[in-house]
Image 1 (cartoon, rainbow, N blue to C red):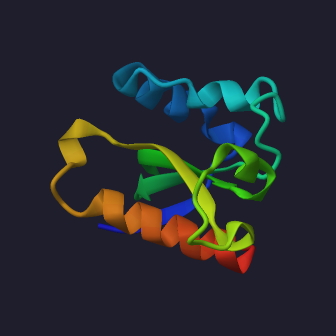
Image 2 (spheres, rainbow, N blue to C red):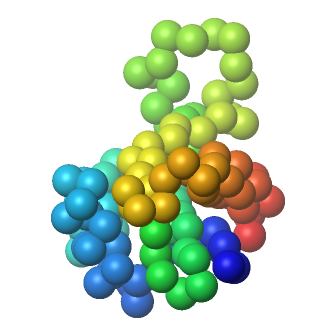
Amino acid sequence: MKLKVQLLRECDKAQIQALDEISNDDIALFFDEPGCSGFENLSLYGLFLENKLIGYCFLANIFPFQEYCNYTYFDERKSFILGSVFIHPEYRKNGYGSYMVKRAIEIKTRGE
């Protein structure tokens, strides 16, 4: 089985919508109105098993939102907001969520 984490694209929207129905999230809406979230640095990542989307998450730079954070023990310019972490129920308990988040952070940090 080949696992791959990559940025989600418009062409993935049908698969995103299918996961949205299960997760009760609205990740697909980010493709309807880009930039409407207020997260200009938002990146959506998908976990694909072969070519099937089995999970997703988003990362956003925290720096524009530091006014909402009362934390002083981290460097806001190097920190991310992580959200909407979801793995399809059939694929849980395999470490896929951890793998997806770690790989998404690597991709965002490197600017791939």
